[in-house]
Each structure stands twice: as structure tokens, then as C-alpha cells.
Amino acid sequence: MYRENWLERLEKRYRWIGFTLLLDLIDGLSLTLSYLFSKTITMQYPDREKWIPYPRFRGHHFLRKFENGDTKCVACELCARICPCQCIKVVPYEDEKGNRRPLIYDVNTARCLFCGLCEDACPVEAIALGQHYEFSAYDSKKLLVGKDVLMKMPGKTEEGGKVVRARLVAGEKVFAEPQGKEGYHWWNRIRRR
Ligand code: SF4
Ligand code: SF4
Image (tube, rainbow, N blue to C red; front, side):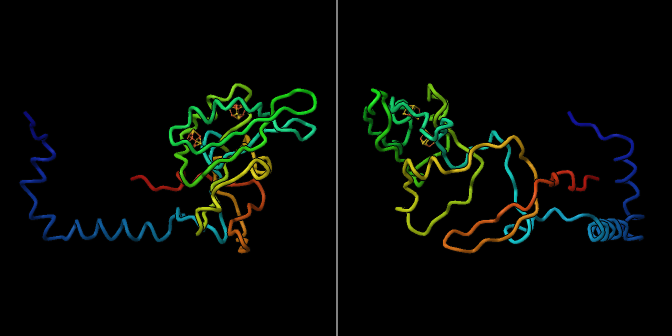
């Protein structure tokens, strides 16, 4: 059973003092006023700032490459088999050296759950989900991406989890381009009283 402590009992008994002196109102106003002079936590996205997610973030897929530019994918189709929404299509072929490679490697990002199972299943770490998240489109057909696009997609970076300065690029694809690597962690700016 809940029992009031002495302070709660005192507050209850002399509540009229607080009412008379408008203490609650003063308390609320002082909090509002203190926010006027504290650092803002509202991100100026996409015009001036951009959130760079952590490397563990599951954003747009990308295909890893060897130094010679060939894809690491061996077209085993494990990713396509494990995908719960069947949004990966792999068609294999054998190159002149007898290596199995993907002729077609499509990902339908409109259907994707970004669960990361394809990344976990890949035996050669060819497919991965990166930190890129600005790929919305008005036409869902544009969200079906092929091997060439996946090989050009940005990979994972070591840095992340902060807000950096950025500039809005409004062309066919609208995105915020980071300007430098220095940033801040927005949760450090949250006032806790
Ligand atoms: S992240 Fe999940 S849903 Fe998306 S392609 Fe990979 S396995 Fe399929
Ligand atoms: S990305 Fe990995 S799992 Fe998918 S087909 Fe290529 S090698 Fe196999």
C-alpha cells in the first residue's frame, strides 16, 4: 500500500500557500524562460544540418566491391531466400574465369523492411545496409534499384551518431550534403531538470 512521505503530507496541508503566492505559475514561467536561453535541439534539416546515423543504422543497401571494382557477390541467392518480403532478385551467371557472379541483382526498397537479414545471411559480406537514408521518390518504380546503383551507393563510415553542418542540394534528388565532419550530439542539449 502506498504511504505518503512527510513532504507530500506537508504540501497537501499547506497547499493554500502555493495557491496564494502563485508558486506553480511562477515555476512554469521560469521553466519556459529558461528554455529561451538554452541551446536549441531542433535540427535545421535539410537546409543547414544533417543527422549522420551510427554505423549500425540500417539504411539503403550497397554492394561491396573488390579493389579492381568487381562486386564481391557470388550470386549464391541466400539473401534473396532469407528476405521475408522477397524484395531481392538475383540472376547468376558464370564469368570467363568460371566465377559465379550476379547478372541481375535488384532490390525493391519500396517493399524492404530494412531488417538486415540479407546482410546477416551473406557469406561473403557483399550486401550491407549503409547509413544513407535520403532516397524517397514519388514513383515506387524508382525505388527498384539494380546492381550498378547498389555498387555506387555510399558504404558504412566509422563515424556517426551526430549532427553535422550541411547544405541543401535540390536537384532531381533532394538531399542534404554534409559540410565537414565536425558535429554535435543533440541529446547532450536536452535540458534535464
Ligand atoms: S533488409 Fe530485410 S527486407 Fe530488406 S532486402 Fe534485406 S532481408 Fe529483405
Ligand atoms: S549478396 Fe551475398 S547472399 Fe546475396 S547473392 Fe550475393 S553473395 Fe549471396
